[in-house]
Length: 142
Image 1 (cartoon, helix red, strand yellow):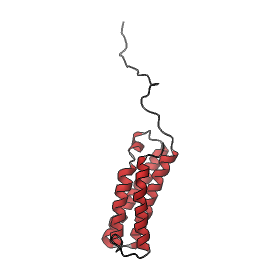
Image 2 (spheres, one colour):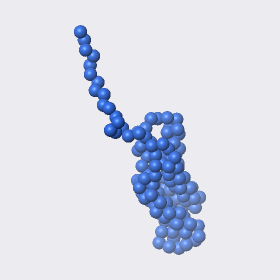
Image 3 (cartoon, one colour):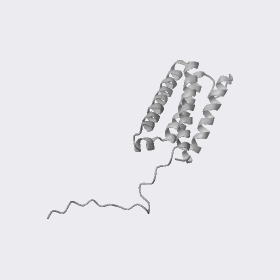
């Protein structure tokens, strides 16, 4: 495939995730990072909108189910579920460990999706000017 506008649109979201986490680690006391819970909530929301909404993996499930596609889908699902679970845990408990795992999982999903977009071959178009339609006609009985 190739990188698309969606990949470009995710960059500011991921930059914001990095900024929130770095500010939290640096002990900043600001609007979004005054506590571990608030930092976790910010990263969870940024990851959901910047990653899930814009990352779009629908094409993964519309291709042939090769072992590589199934592995990618399983890995992305596992990391995504982990991010959601530890994100909720970090918001509820204020755990710094859960926040760190949330940050790592969010970044891993973004890197994984971007690499998949950059490195996989594009699928050929379903129809083009070189595609000829075949009309299925019932057999002729004599």
